[in-house]
Image (cartoon, rainbow, N blue to C red; front, side, top):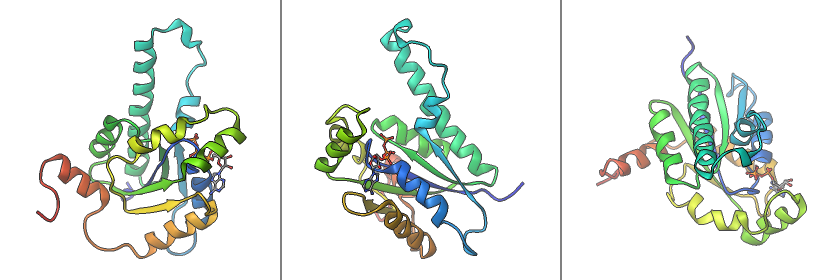
Length: 198
Ligand SMILES: Nc1ncnc2c1ncn2[C@@H]1O[C@H](COP(=O)(O)OP(=O)(O)OP(=O)(O)O)[C@@H](O)[C@H]1O
């Protein structure tokens, strides 16, 4: 079996530009320093795999259970791909604390690079209006919860930066990663009540 792959985990509100950035990353993470092709695993794509049964047939609690299982399965699929030796760009919305806790647990022992994908509230609302398939204001309402844990390895702001330039910023970070604990290391230590450096 190959050595485990790397997980580049993009976290940001809806419309922050995660999908666009992931597409660029798959192109930019190339060349002699990136010997294996990255895969893009998207939480939205996992949702789209579900049978399109009308949710009216399910109680609100059942809908919540389906969505929770979908996301828990996504976390395990991302970890499984990496454990099989694949490098992965995963995009997610860490808007509920359990999602991050679950990723910290199921991705234990793997190299995870946590990327904060930011965007201004005004630009999020503009994108929602253009897309037409998102409720206006939904993304801005998520922002605080999505970034509540406050720790990243690298961050980008898509408000005025193109997906390509954000991808180059992340590539440059990966090529010159500082030594020391990763964001996931620090979040795990904080969860265990022993913050790094104390
Ligand atoms: N850096 C950027 N600059 C300008 N527009 C962008 C940028 N990134 C994404 N967009 C636009 O914003 C919209 C949402 O982008 P995208 O689907 O990549 O976001 P997302 O974070 O994956 O959203 P969701 O979580 O809702 O699927 C698209 O119309 C896209 O073209």
